[in-house]
Image: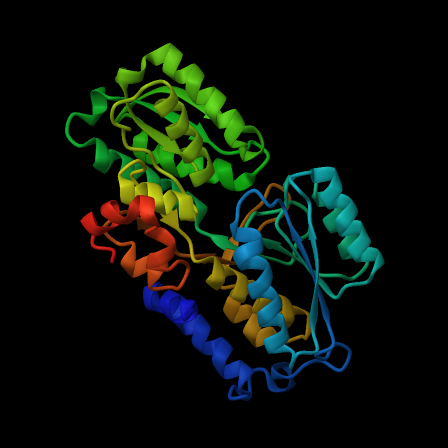
Length: 375
């Protein structure tokens, strides 16, 4: 899909240097600094098992992008000798703890975990640590003694969404009423999205209603939007900050059901296919495009480098530092994001091979696609 090259084009010089360091270390070019660290350690060669714990299946990204790409990258990095032990929690935090414990029992070599509940997973992370198994927090910052963290810059996501909404509202935004549909209170990313958005929106619009959405559930989001419409009045809602595309779809559905003549600007995140199609049709204003292939690929590189003792590569992949409620200065990689609107669909999800024009421009969307130049 050439996503790695696309990411490098968009990334700052420091990250580009990191990628270069990884490439040099992988090829054994770096001398003097790392010596034998550029090779697999005697105890952990290519025959390794990466445990992968993903949170749910409702968001299509996890099984469409994350899982297959991590599997492919682990195989590539280990001469097809490494494997991925995968489990999905189905949005259940207790189930995910059981899955993590099973991986500890099975003695996997390293664990990548995208936590359903960042706080409750801490006890499982500690058990893995006690068993000598490194744990890397993937996409969401887990609590407990994690060894590294990889995700997107989540406050930046919220800032991008907030700025886009203000742009869509245009002049006299300070007098316009909006609704905030935030993510799950158990997801630390949701708090960061909200913080970033509030930094942009506070004092510049009237936030009439704000909701945190249990488990990111669109059914809950739709019910909350219906409450907001009843309280504020459909015609008085100038825009909606929606934390992701699933909630954006629920918000738009609620407004349509209540008889809106023209959907006001609604934000989103994840660049899901349904959302991209809504953007083409003018029903959703924007989404935040995050290159999941880049994140998944880098996470696999990080996991393999960690367990094989490739310290130069691991350090190059974790030049950022973040703090969690339980740990400070966690080695991290925060990846860039892009505001996706009807004006840059070609340059983002299509160019990166996430979707084809044919997938976006179904029969129902052909006329709208033509209007925005997708043919």
